[in-house]
Length: 481
Image 1 (cartoon, helix red, strand yellow):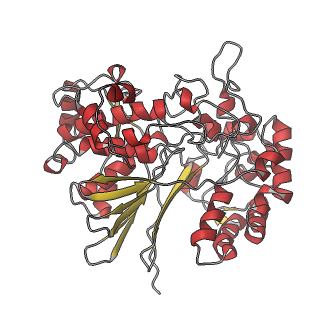
Image 2 (cartoon, helix red, strand yellow):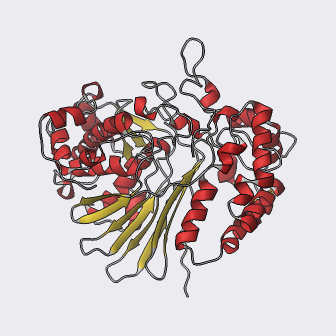
Image 3 (cartoon, helix red, strand yellow):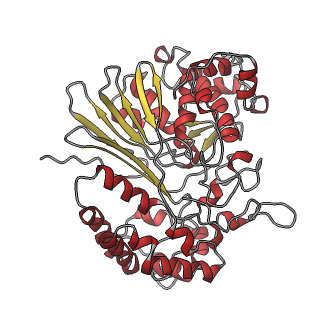
């Protein structure tokens, strides 16, 4: 997504300079949607099935699907209240006289089916021009939003070189800015590679301490330096280098936690030290989706897509049937102030017209030391995406877990600020929590789950093993020729 052309740096600040709810709720929260154009571009370059064949199953789902409890879990009292504020959202998601559907009901979305039908038949023109575009612009006018015909007609998807880094002989390929996922994983992995993690018990206080220390340093740099590369020059070669990892780890103490207040962005001190650099490269909602694919020819695809929050901006486009994102909250609406995921970001990620906001999406493809496909993975999860994907990969590489074990293993998270280690409910034994607290960490058990990883691992014999995270559902499905 991009900021609309009418966006401005301080658009979400009130008269006192405080961030309003407009960045997360309502028409002004939406960035210019990019998924349709992105999927189209990938299909044009790599697709083997026809575009209509790929879109038609989505049309069928929009025409009606059976409501299950997992869907109803997203419609708690606060969400229902938010959706009721927007007539089209209430009509679509609260069909029982303003109340949610019940388990076993069929939820029919004819307007969405019609929109998907236009995309099926017309490609991106079925979204960015014509009827759908007119409906989007009319919805913007209805609620004071900013997306215009000019925004939609000028939207292009950007092709960028992926972030590639090595970890214990394996090559990991992930998403570059304006996603922060790849380079943040690279910095954290490079720090962790300096230590003998394979010899540590995977859920030991020693290992969790090291991961938290690596993450707090990597997230500090993420929040300060990373942004849209069309607007900001970033020190990516430094951030992804082994030399910088060693510099960052120099003050990492195995016996005590480093307060996040003492950890700041460090590229400038690193460069001043004239070190040589090798060239090269909060509770979660079910608002992001990831899928991992390996086909019969060994082609691998890892895709993460999102509307940012549960039900995005809560605004459904009248007559078009889809929910608008609230991706504008991924900008630093007020640099130095936390967003909805608790990320405290800097000036580089401030709002500007036509700028892409910084995300945490971290789709990943892993190659073994011989250059063969080893793993495809990714997850939703807001700011925890980066740590969930990296933990899943480390579980396989460092601890020899199979894909099911790697995904089922409890997860922890640290993102520099707030200065806390989060762990899943019942995810850590009490003695491990006590050890971490003795090291100086604040350890918080969070409600719910962390992530929804989807992974495929290629076994030594070339067969494929898939696992969909049971934390939220989904499925691993294979097809034979």
